Length: 316
Ligand code: HSE
Image 1 (cartoon, rainbow, N blue to C red):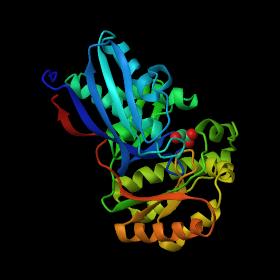
Image 2 (image 1 turned 30 degrees about the horizontal axis):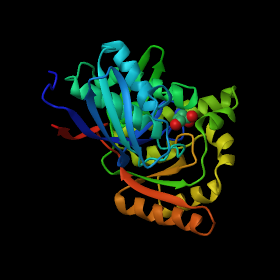
Image 3 (image 1 turned 90 degrees about the vertical axis):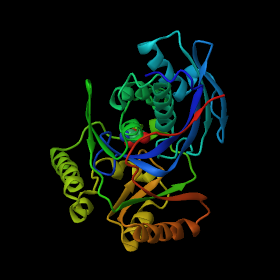
C-alpha cells in the first residue's frame, strides 16, 4: 500500500563488486559497509529533481545524472505525473570500480518504489536502474545494479529479456577492496577489451563461472578459491591499474581465497574466509600502495545479504 503519510525516505544505497574475476558482465556481489546515503521525497512538481549532491561534483540535471535517468525511466513506466526530489550524500567515488553509478540508480528506484507502496518487485526495478548505467558508460549492464537491489551474489543470465538469478552467500565470506585514487572510466576500460576470445579461453572461463556458482551453494571455499580466475578481461585491463601484480601477490600472501579487478577498476578486490584474514589482506594490500605515491582508500566488508536498505521514514 502507498505510504501516503510519509513524505520521504532516507536510505543506504550499497556499493558492489561486479565481475568477480571470471564473470565479466554477469556476476556481482553487494557490499555491507560501503555505500551512499540518499533521501527521496515526494514533490508537487512532476519528474525527478535532484536538489543536492554532497561529496562529489556531479550534475544536478535529472537527464544528465544516473539517479535522475533511472528515476525518470521508472516514472515513465508507472506514472509520469508523479514527482520526486532526491538528495545524495556520495560516499562511493565515481570511477572507483565499486558501483558508484549503480548505487545512485538503485537507491533512487528503490526509494520511489518504497514510497509508492512497492508496486514493483526488486527484480522488476533492475531495468530502470540499468538506464542509469547506460548513461554512465554507454552500456546498460546489470552486474552492479542487480546486487545493489537484490543483495548477496547475483548472476545475470541474460539482459534481453532480463533474467537474473539470486545466488546464496557463504556465511564467512568477507571482501577487501583497495581503491587506488586514479580514475579509470568504465567506457575506457571496456574499450581496451578484445571483441573475440579463443575457444580455449572461453572453455576455461565458463568452467570457472559454473564452479564459482556451485561453490556458493556448497559453501565450498576451496572451490571458490580455484574459480576466482579470469583469463579474458583481467589480462587486458590490468595494464590500467598501477601495481596490480604486486597487489594480487599481497592478497595471496595475506591468505585471500582470490583477488581480481573490482568491476572495471581501478579498485582491486579480494575475497577471504573470515574477518581476520580479510583484515590481514587489507594490511598486505595497503603496504603495497604505501610504498608508492598513489593515495588510496581501503575497505573491508562482509557481503550484504539484502540490497538498498531503508533507514527511516521522513515525516516532515
Ligand atoms: N561489468 C562491467 C565492466 C562493470 O566490467 O565493464 C562496470 O562497473
